[in-house]
Every structure is written in structure tokens, then in C-alpha cells.
Image 1 (cartoon, rainbow, N blue to C red):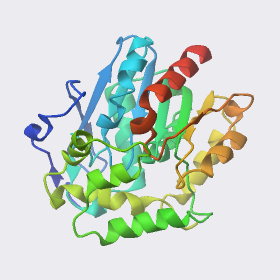
Image 2 (cartoon, rainbow, N blue to C red):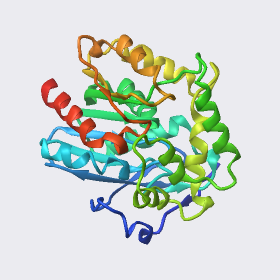
Image 3 (cartoon, rainbow, N blue to C red):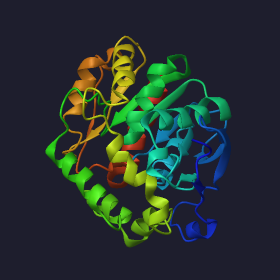
Length: 306
């Protein structure tokens, strides 16, 4: 198959970001198919603080965490927000076929554990951040101190996805021009400023760069024989045995993932006996709608679980 063709967004696309002056950091990670991929991340807070890994989903990037990172840092936590491969400042494979669920898990594993050597991590995952993050926990449990899941799940393809998700997937597949900023705005309950919308468009100078956002909906397992189904079933069976503290902090207005919150709360040992907050007046992108409130919930969870 040879090396993956990678695109890199020019730095000047990120020159006019609002409220996001964290200097980008980069790690070169080996790609399973050969070659090297540059993964970008930002961090804030004390370098020796308990690490919190903030994983975004489709089609956003670490900018999504700009309201949360100051709150986490002020609580003494080391907040680390990577850009998934194909998103943000990370390298972007130019072909949709270069994206797979397994490779996204491996890329984030290599960043978190090989490059950053994180231990005692609390992971926060929303959307694809949870689909990837929950796999990381199941496959590397010794590295984790806690899990916070928000508007996410771990689908195996054994249950159908909600109608609204199928509509979203179809819209992405059919779009000649994929309007990333509009897609983020549609998932916010409290609106999205023009500046923020522009920041979500920034990583993608043109359609060539959008293989990641275009590929992700098709990588969600929707049939029992999906390429990721076996690995996700194995992850479920491992996760439900683990005693790692587990918190659900779902929004009250995300029809795509609403059903997943109660399932995770019932299934995870580490979720038993906890109060799982519902974030009010918040949509799919709960980090945009209620970032400060959500970050306070995470900080309290991390500090009380120690």
C-alpha cells in the first residue's frame, strides 16, 4: 500500500484564532503502514499535575477545549488536548481509505503513551473522542485513573443508530462542499460565534483536506460484521470488568447520543454509586455550550478520585 499521502494545513490558517493562544506542540509518531505522522496537541496547567486527556470528535479539533483548559489548569490539572489525525493542526491523510477506526485508536495510543508517556490519566471523550478513548482504556487499563464520557458511546454494530445520526451520515456523504463550521454550529444549543465558526473551518483550506471529517461517519460500526465490531465487543467486555472510576456527563439536548448515557452508567462498575450530572441547555458540542461547567465537573471528579 505504501506510505500514506499526507497534507499539512499551513500555519497561517491558525493566525487569527480567538481565545486560543496555546502554542501548538507536535509529536512525530510512526504510522502502522510506514512513514511518520505529525500529531498536534496543546496543553495547559502544571506539567506534574494529574493528566487529563481531552479527546475531540467529528469534525472539530482541540480548539473545542478552549473554555475548559483554563478551568482544568486552575484546578492544578495538566490538560492535554490532541488533534485527531486528519483534524486541526495534525497531519491529514489525503484519502478517505487511509482512515480506519483501528488506526485512529493506534495513532492516539502512540501519542498518549509512546510520545507523551502518560500515566494515571483521566480521559475525557466526546463523540469520536469517546469511541477512540474507551478503546484506549479497555486496551491499556493500567495507564488510566478515570474516565469521563460525554455525548459518546462505543457502538458494536449490534444495535441500530438513531435516525438523526443516519441523516447526518448521509448529509456528510452527499455534500459536495462539506461545511465544517456549519456542522459544529448545528450541534450547539447556545449558538456559535462567527469567530468560533471560522476557527472550525481553519484546518481545512479546501475540500482536499477534509478526508478525515468525510470518513469518520462511515467508520462508526453500524453492522455486527463491521471491521471494528469485534474489537469494540472485546473492549465492552473488558470495560465492564474494570473498577476504574467512571463518570457520565451528558448534555440534556443531544438526540444522537442521549440513549448511551444510561447504558454506560448501568454497565460500568466504576460508574456505580456516583452522581452523574446532566449538563443543562447543552447540545452535542457540550464543550462549546457549557465548557466551564463541564470542566468544573471533570476537575472535581479527578481530585475526588485520587
